[in-house]
Length: 311
Image 1: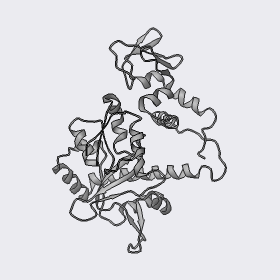
Image 2: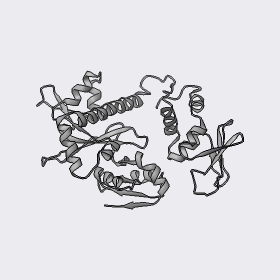
Image 3: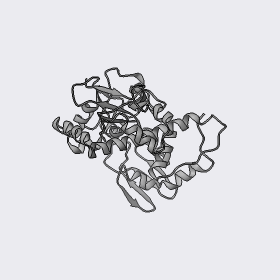
Image 4: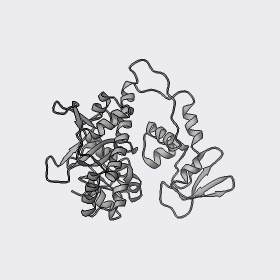
């Protein structure tokens, strides 16, 4: 059982997220009397029929009938479940919700997930810095540039690199206070009797592709060599926050365009998504392999029912 929000926290998050400001991130609103109006973000129209009551913090579309509060709005516009919408709105205003105390052991699973999310974020930042500031990182950057990817595309997808040191990131993480057991649980380090420290980096000496979930949290990584050594790709193992068949690469960046286009293009890998994006085609995601799963299809179907395979 996961921890429950403490009493009053739902209202706290609601009050911190002004509905007019939130809706304005998706459609232009104009003040009309005490309310605001604009084109509905949920259906195509030429005459504004979408109204936001700033006093009651409610919205209603007289065209399609959609209506509700900040929670229902973000659930609809971003195809989120209610718990995801709560976290999305809390993150939006930099608020950390308080949770009720739970009996010993009840919240352990959620706590372990949060640890891995934090470690993954630390790793992503480390890999990004490595790409920009190390000699091997510059080799990786030149490798990508020579293959036609621009620095803007590389930055947009937050591509990084892992140093050639046996435990470069692992040692960095330990210095930052991460425990070895948590580091191993994240899949970013692997035990080895051959290493003097007893462990080594999972992704050492590779270009790094961060993999995020629908809420843009880093859940895993993919690593690629820049020479002819094997294996060419190394991927994160399954962890409490990552099951390969339930994640779609690029979805957090493409979901808005998938809704607008009412279509999703599914390609095989990371660089395929990058190539399409660089050509101005943004409603594209990758299955990370040709074995498209039912769970991946269900995830994509939260944003569109029109799926095109581009393998």
